[in-house]
Amino acid sequence: MSLVETNEKCIGCNRCIALIPTMKDIVSKLKKDLSLRRIHIMLIIILILVSGTVVYATFHLTSSFLRITAAYKESMEFQDAARELMDASDYLTEQVQRFTISGDIRFLNQYFTEAFESNRREEAVDRLAAGTGTDAAVARLQAAMDSSMDLMNQEYYAMRLVIDAKGYTDYPEVLDSVELTPEDAALSPFNKLSHATELVLNDDYFEQKDRIRTEMQESLNEIDKLARETEETELGKLKENLNFVRIIIIIHATGIIFMLWLTTHLGINPILKAADSIRSDRPIPEIGASEFRYLALAYNRMYSRNKTSLERLNYKVCHDELTGAYNRAGYDVFMDNLDLSTTCMMMLDVDNFKGINDTYGHETGDKILIKLVRILQGVFRDDDCICRMGGDEFVIFMVHAAGMQRRLIESKITQINDELGNPDDGLPAASISVGIVNGKSVNDKEHLYEKADAALYESKKQGKHTYTFG
Image (cartoon, rainbow, N blue to C red; front, side):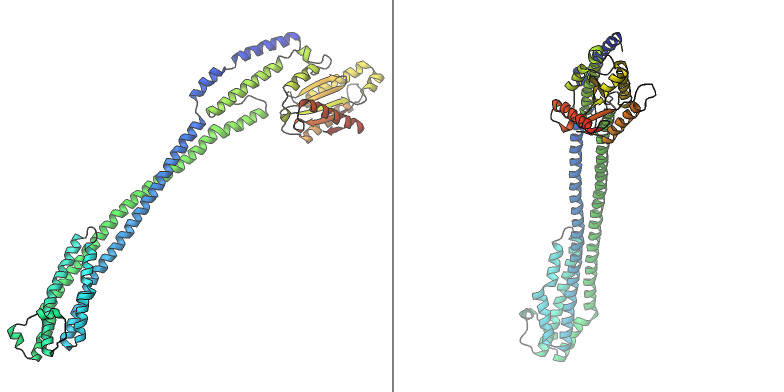
């Protein structure tokens, strides 16, 4: 490359720098872009609200289930209460009938124990009255209770006849208030017993019992109706809550999927593409969230400046006139901008180069150096820097290196020595010795050179035509 070509390239690079967006342009563009942080905060808030709604809906579901359970339990209790009243009424009838037939005072006592101590009928009415919406059922049950109380008056009268007929003196005081009609009082004991039995076994008595059962059945029907209505209402609410929960869960799942997609689209994919671009030494695509676009723009700006700076190096000042490789000045520029963490240094020289000059002449030695640089340029990447330090000593910077990459370096050295050792251009065979150092293994740039020089010395000491990793 001539000085004129270099100057023209440098002028072009100045134009490129002028085209690089300013920070003001970057900030202006960022205002129009999506912010991943802001979107994530909004999505997190939305998902928290949706999650809270799901929790709230589950409480409603639980409440609906508990109400249905309570309604069913209450319905069962009401039915049990109604049956208790019927059972108590039937029990009283059974005892009074046994007493009038047998005259056994035990049945009389059992009757009044049920009527005044157990109080199952009164408790049944009270339990039903304590419920909600049971007015109709309570009215029916109370009517049955009233009919039962009316029937008790007839039963009391029959029991009084038996007591008089048997001459019992020890009986409940409530029967003292029962007065027999003059006609019944005048009856013989046998006729009194017969009349008492007739009072609790005749058609009129059983008709009253049937009325009580009818009222009881109507009460049970009202309880069943109330239970069905309550169940239908609560099941309807439960269904509504279930549908609401399904909708919320779908929204919740959709939000999570959307967040994953957004994170991938605005964050992960741009990072992966940026990594590929950096490995390939290309500008980073300015895509994704505004935060990443900012980083991409900043990186691309530095990338362009770095490229421009390298291209603007004065060719004659920074390059070796004989071989076209960078000279010591170019080496110093690279050292000033070196990133130790991503660079490997290779130091090499031509084995027995003095002997080649002495045997074949300095012109042949120069041709071998020119040939070596040409081979090095073919083996290494364009971004790698080849520097001639003086004489036959060279330094190669392998930049953007992920690690030592021993196999790759070994294959490159083998290829170089194969081409030098098997010439087809009339030049004598030659070989190189190499010392290799990873920038990560040293603390500063000065030690990098020293360690590479020591590794090269070790290769020479081993008999040349070899390489040593420092």
